[in-house]
Image (tube, rainbow, N blue to C red; front, side, top):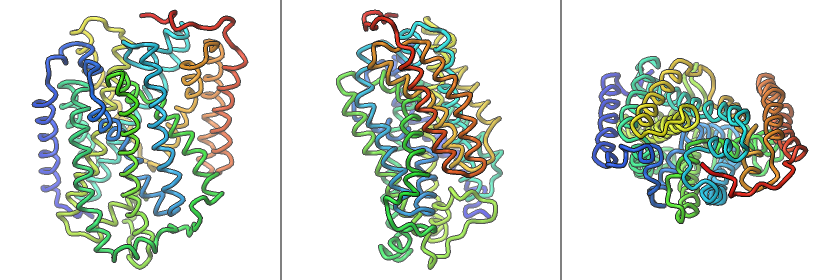
Length: 476
């Protein structure tokens, strides 16, 4: 049942799309987008302030907006702690990784590009491309599905209509100037998230009855009183920490920003970006606590995914205009990751598949890649819960996280160990993890996650390079 009329929903989508296109056209359509370097890495001249806002905004996607509230609703303070802490750490770790890769490959574009040159292996390069492309595809698909579900829930517009509209909006403005468009709109979208959140959340708290209504749901519907509950730490904490850290490191969006932000401002950009991000799930978690308060009677309509519990809470407590604003806030978060995913996928395609050198050819290929991955994303939009999907593609990312870190810091890393470690992790570890999810057995899921990390590490260490690699060997 909709809370906003369909006509108002269509009008809102039109206004939102036009606003993002105008922002991009007037603020990001600079001369440097005519070059490959401008289109893919914004001329490598992004400052730490706007870079931090882009880092934060692109990490504020469906899990941060919906899964965070779901976990606070189900598992209380313990749930939101084990969601937020690893999320912040996942971005903050780039304060170390980003300066390192910029030193080793100053004019780079993608992490797989670095791996190809670092290990001098086409086999390893190709096996790396699977999780990197898959992560961007899933990022795009999940945003479309979550955003479509959100708008459909509140307006009654069919999901099959909403998703293509959202895809076209992000695609149009990202096609204009690539990463520059993503970064500029990220800044605008993050500002809107904070401003609207500062209006809507206090209104929701007040309508529910204030701090006492929030505190009544701090244990979640599962009644977990200890924020460091051992069961939650084991079943949720380990898998989430591994998945989130691996997810960020295996996400081209952050390597693309690493190559775009000024070298001497990388540390500040990622630290501030991590802190800005953390504010969002912590603030939104209060909606989950309110929903867990039985006195408020927040109930989801039949068939609606539990990740939408925060939206339902706002819809129950506030008038239609406030719900409308809340939808704007959530769509800003989803759109910021959607356009970042399009831009990241285009950089992978141009750099690692087409290997375009000519500026015109590179930009044309980048735009074609954006259109192509959008079509694929729409075609495979998932019809199951966001929570398990989020776990699965983060686990795919975990297969390459250890070799990636070792490639930056260990001079004896060899292509053989990376290839076999990643392959075994994919072939053995990933099916075990999926099976653990299917049977809903935390021992299986945690065991599979740890196996993936362990086996990729063992192969890398057991098959070292005979002579130490020297950074001077890395050249374009």
